[in-house]
Image 1 (cartoon, rainbow, N blue to C red):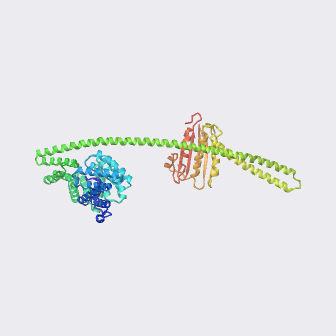
Image 2: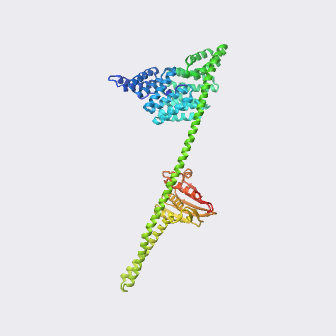
Image 3: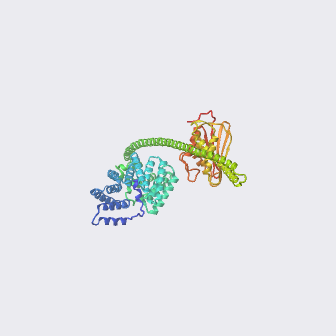
Length: 639
């Protein structure tokens, strides 16, 4: 069904809001004194647009009036809308030169005023004209621009028609998979918007695309939906398109009787559609071919003469004229008119040469466009990879800064604890000595003095225990920070695990228990502070994975030359997909195992820096085990 795609939906005679009667009333009010020129232009344009598929001639007249008034009063937006409507309502698109001029004028003006919907619509219409005449090389960039503007405007209807154009051009280029993908996306937009005209237009194009792609069942299904919708909204245009596709399918399977019935039905439905003669040319040529094969030469000639009368010399109809000339040559040959057959055949060959040259240009442009798109994709991938690399570097720097800050905090905390701790220990010893002296000096007959001395001694012992605990915490901070050691050295990773466990225990939620099974393992060479932080991060996340009561267990084992550290929890576990992305940068799941965005990734990086690996084993509802494996000391750490 060859018709300018962006205007095809207007042939669906659905009730619109506002109705034509309401727009007529608005125009009458706008024309009454005192006249507001801008309001008058808008009323003329609104009515012309509503009538463009119902009364083409009057729509054209109204749009011309609007254009003249808009030009007089400097209303560029009104002029742009009027010019586009005039281009779409030139009778049968006979004067293609005027169609292009008006369409280009509309495009230029919409660009000047920055109207996104207009910019999309004007390019959409221009693309459809170029597609119609077979100039796909020009049509595709315009259609893609239209799609970009339509999406920027946020109008799903406009986007749907832009996608329809892109899909139609891809189908004309025989890229059927991509065409169907774009058309189905357009169909979903129109269905969500409950726009029957758009749905019908896309179904029609999908039927043609599936037909040409060799999917007869899908084509028939789409055609049946087109016809059902056409009956529902009283659209002869949609009915005609459905009948044409069904006729094509019948002809392809050799059912000439069915094909003839469908083609006749298509022409009958099309007879009352404005600007129908170009749309019916292809159908008449197909019908004529069937009639020639059956020997009904007179009726075939009648159809072909009608086609040639309307399409000969029209740039918009080169393909239709070539097909008609070929059919007419066949007809003349059957009639025994060899000279007439030769004349028609020569004309057909000349037209086919034009079409071949144009198709060659289109093919070159298509290859160039695909090459440009591939180059753009490669550039985009390079930029994406560079961004990921930069993001990883930034994340590593942030994590290193976090680790350094945590180390300084831990060291500072240990220092601040140790100073008053020394004073308290000294004072406690002094109090104990003083209490013993008081007992020695007190009279033997004074039981109260001796009882008070025992109380002081008991308090001293309790204080010593508390001070010992504080000293242990301070020492854990110090070992965790490792600031009193060389940056890279040989170390026992169990010390780091013990420190991390000690720091984590005071923050445990109620019901969560930390356990340690730290067996003897060989020492490692590397950066203990970074590894301590990695263990703390994994332990912390294991705790966060537990809802309610549960256990987190840290285990060290020696497996041959490999040092193994396991952190096991009895938490909610993860799916395989979640586990696969656990150490990705920025990984986060609401209600998932962790909300930290960099810590786990940094733990993975730190482990690899030490030449190790991390493995994740998890089952939903049964907990997770994270296993660190570190190589022998004679393997040089990475980094």
